[in-house]
Image (tube, rainbow, N blue to C red; front, side, top):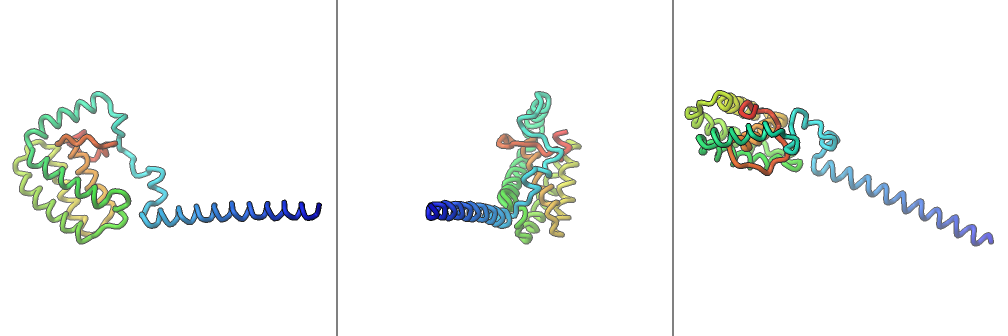
Amino acid sequence: MEDNQKRKKDNKRLWWILVSVIIITGVGSSIFFFNFFGIGLDALNNSDTAGSVEQKDLSVEEEGKINTVRSTLGESHQELGDFVSSTHEFYNDTTGYGGINNLDWEEQRIKSKQVINEIEKLLGDVTDEPLRKDLNSIVTLSKQTIEEDVELVRLLHRYFHDLDIALNDYTTYDRIWNVTETLK
């Protein structure tokens, strides 16, 4: 009888040890994962999506506005649209999936200089005032990102994201950041 109670006690202790090891391993792995990929708790609660609109929440009016802008501005500024699309792709590649926390600042500076030069060349053909304001804002931000400010790079990415929606047939988005004058 005593032997049986001792076995039960030992089994209970083993289960507690096993559960403890599993919990510690899970917590440790999670901490490693979030640190390795530079994901903070703010990314989990989506605090930096304030002001954005999810695609599924767009009204018929907003979708109509996007389609109108695409068919007017997008059609008349195809070279600018191509530039916006390729630059948006650059920011997707370099800042997406936690990359924003591990930026190659030399690569970002080079891209910022290219953005400034390209927009200054293309700006002369743009007569739409909201689009001109957006392009001038991008030039200003690009000049400031040389100072290695992550939030400015994030904002630049959002400008190119929203302009890609406005000027091109970019439809694989899940939200509009509402940073541009062009989509207001």
